[in-house]
Length: 252
Ligand code: 5IU
Image 1 (tube, rainbow, N blue to C red):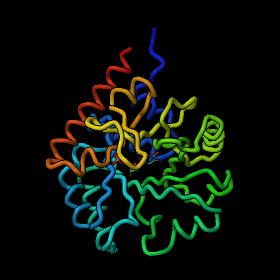
Image 2: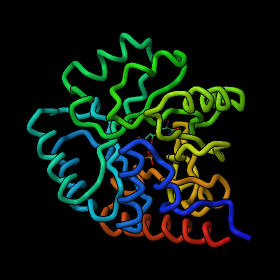
Image 3: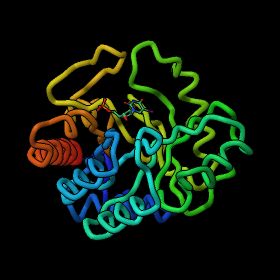
């Protein structure tokens, strides 16, 4: 009997959005489902980490508003590393306002996210229309469920978030901590091989667990990589562990 788990090749064939196709194609090419969350505070650290681990990842996830010395030159450099190493730029902005405000936050300000981000995250708290302001080129990843303890994203919230996500054509996937009853791609943060939680509410799972239990498509690793003394070695470890978990799941 064929497993219900589709391969990345099968999923890529089903996608209509270019960013969804692209991230799946990179996954296949690099044998990686790893997204590195580079939550560091200087452009130099982001650029250095991106260069060092670029071969092992499908995307770099960023919180651009924690960077102290943001500049347009940084964006040019980061884009050039992303092109050279073949990964996407994913701004974890978690938009959560009315459409009119989100549009200004997406296109304007210092960061001009719409100029460079391939992927962005958005809450759905303000309702379906608030998501219609993002341009069609960017892949939206909605937040259906959070990884933190006592999050308010309960089953009903998750269900409604997925319904909204399915109605917007450039939503390519969701962030969640459980299976998606949907063909949207699943992105899972809160992944760490060495800790089960931090002291600020974060909960961690292993790559194996999020593939086996949640049928995730992409793992997102922050401190597990960028805080390590050898980020390259650690990124390779997560790449291998995520890929093995994927292979095991498609063979069941
Ligand atoms: N992130 C989560 N959980 C969530 C969502 C986003 O951890 O539910 I939505 C982000 C926060 C951080 C990264 O940028 O993913 C995880 O980093 P650590 O691996 O360092 O916890």
